[in-house]
Image 1 (cartoon, helix red, strand yellow):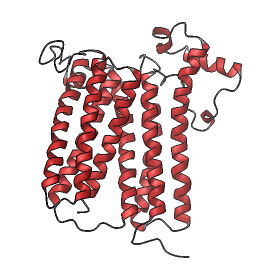
Image 2 (cartoon, helix red, strand yellow; image 1 turned 45 degrees about the vertical axis):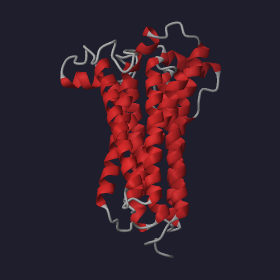
Image 3 (cartoon, helix red, strand yellow; image 1 turned 180 degrees about the vertical axis):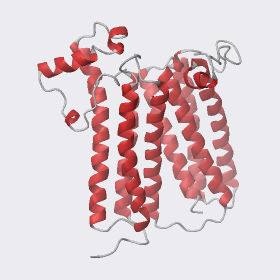
Image 4 (cartoon, one colour; image 1 turned 90 degrees about the vertical axis):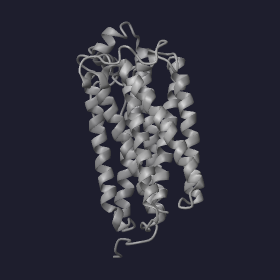
Length: 343
């Protein structure tokens, strides 16, 4: 039997990883839809295998609806909801969970096949195994998030929502990075470490900004201070601090919105500085400089979408576009950081 690949590109492996990354991207978008439609608590049990099959009879639908009626969200927010309304939110959450299961299958089956055929580069074996474990952890974190909203809350805890989102994005980034590694082959030495560090820090800033957006979404903080660039006519929200630092950073509506705004300004400035310097640098090749410019343009579009979403009080369609574009910005930032290491 032949040994595992030691060098050279592995394009089929790369395509597989990119497909899984696209599925994770879709899962983030569907997850955003689930949150915006208040559907995340419609399924009150975690059944990793049997939960794949939805209710198939009126009795089964009635039993699922009865489970939902026992949680605070129904009693305090959706009292009087009919079965048709319940089915609407149920299908969103079921689709989100089904997509998570499909991501697991789409990763596990080709992984076993590539290992069996010894087509997976040796340098990527443990990375891929780690990615599979990370995906399993994401499923558990998803239930941990949902569980926070079943007893004493009408929605999931914002900090748990942000952890769930953050872990999904880590998986998304690592899939893209590993796919690029498989496509290009072993790393070649790069001649300008400054660009490697700067672009990696930029990708980190994009990631942090999305997490801050997760806190805004989890706290529904986009429904206050809907004037921009001021806060109800003030330069800074008067109710920024509420309680201790943890309470302020995680649960103060004014604080999570202000933090998201301020980081957006920093990010927008940073991407344009990197793009303009990259276009003039002799150390950054044209493809990487083009990526930097594309990142700056898309980040600007995302900022405009963010302001519009805020001022219009987060309409569903616009909020979804804003969340989807955020994931696209992160993908571009990761691609730029990877490319800068190959200079």
